[in-house]
Every structure is written in C-alpha cells, then in structure tokens.
Image (cartoon, rainbow, N blue to C red; front, top):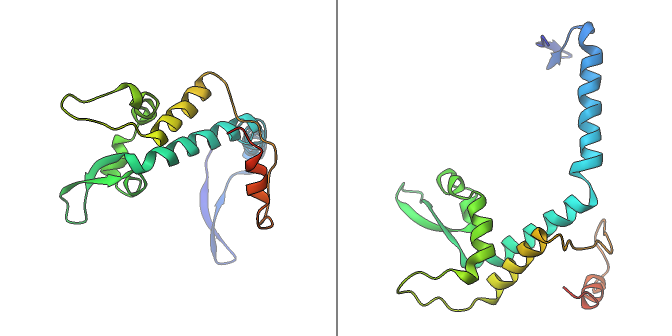
Length: 158
C-alpha cells in the first residue's frame, strides 16, 4: 500500500490510491471483527478484571528497581514503576508468576510475614489458570446510586 500525507482543508490527511480501497475496507472489517469477537469478549473482560484485581492486591507489597528523578537507582511501588521505562522493562510475565507463587517463596535469612492480600492475589491468578473465571452478574454504565454496588457485592462469594 502506498500512502501519502496530503493537506485537506488545512489538515494533514493520510491518503491511499483508489485501487487500495478494498484492501483498506478488509483491514478495518477484520479489526472490527477482532474487537467484537475477541478483545471485547465477556471471558476476556472477566480475565482482565481478575488480573487487575490480583495486581491491585499485590501492588502495596511489591517494589521494582528503577531510576529516581536524579538518575540514581531506587525502588518504586508497582504503580510508580509504570512511569519509569527501566522499571517497566523489569515487569514481564515473571511478576504474575511471582505473585502467584509468593506464598511458596522465602529468601534465606528473611522472615517474610504472611500477607493475606498476596495470598488472595495468588489465588485469583491460580483461578485463571484453572479456568475458574468470574461471572459477570451486572454491568454498570454511568454512576450507580449510592450503595447499589455494596449491596451487590455483599451477595457475592468473592
């Protein structure tokens, strides 16, 4: 595909030759189909929510080495690490494995207390592997009335 940037009404616009019209339509149809059938699938969304919850539970208990504003090495919280490219490079799949198995790891000489939040995060990640995926009971759009979420959550086994 040969695209060019041309000015249209004073704005730069990406333009393709007419002969590429069908190819472009196919690309956008495929993209829309992938979003509808895969990326926005209810199971994918449930797994995404489970992973978010596991990381939210584990975040206060994990620090990643990165660089501070002076360029010196410093440990940062998990949420701060996403702003630091060096720390971000460290956060690969091992982090999920670490959270999942944190209850089974101990460093020699260090007494690591039992951390219920890490144990819960570990259990959530194990549930994903065992395909015990959360069921979506209700989906809100907008701001719900005060107390509605608490009432629903009080009936949940999670």
